[in-house]
Image (cartoon, rainbow, N blue to C red; front, side):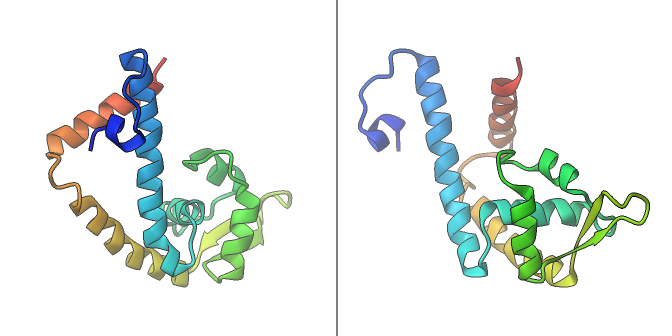
Amino acid sequence: MKLEDEIKQKSFGSPYRRMFVNVMFTGNWVQKEIASLLKPFGLSLQQHNVLGILRGQHPNPATLGLIQERMLDRDSNATRLVDKLLEKGLVTRCQCSDNRRKVDIIITDKGLELLKQTDGLLQALEERFSHITPEEATLIGELMDKLRDR
């Protein structure tokens, strides 16, 4: 459905204004879709993002700083997110042996297993976009990169 129909607005003043409204609207739509898939697992988007970062580091530990710099939503409170994941048994936290001021965070087997389950859901979401060719998906990604490039 066209953006104009979705938000019931006839014009935007310029193609650039329409573009960034569309990017924001579509980004919010995608986040809601993913959030609804993660809800039965008791995970927020940000918690899932942290687990994905930790899986990418596995078996090596990550620091809060590394997690924060790799997060999709960099305004999120990484400490609070890790605390929530710790309560759920999805991560462990311990003091770094080399630097006592540094805290090491590692995904647990339970966290890895949970990500295997959510991977299947995200794959199903990808399949909903099968009307977009791989070439078009690549182009959309490149254009989004270009938006952030200054």
